[in-house]
Image 1 (cartoon, one colour):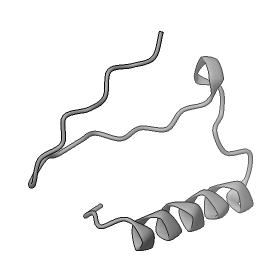
Image 2 (spheres, rainbow, N blue to C red; image 1 turned 45 degrees about the horizontal axis):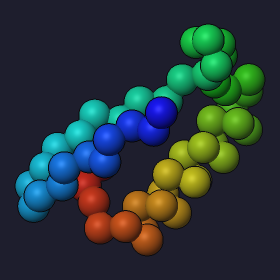
Image 3 (cartoon, rainbow, N blue to C red; image 1 turned 45 degrees about the vertical axis):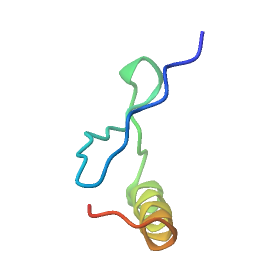
Length: 51
């Protein structure tokens, strides 16, 4: 069953987390971590938000 849509309003704050399946290691090396940060940066450029 899908999660209910989040309520959004100007000034809303959300906690965002990332974790591996069953809390396994998310990044295996610095290359993985840097790729993730690049993807986050690209998403931030497309979406108006403050991180």
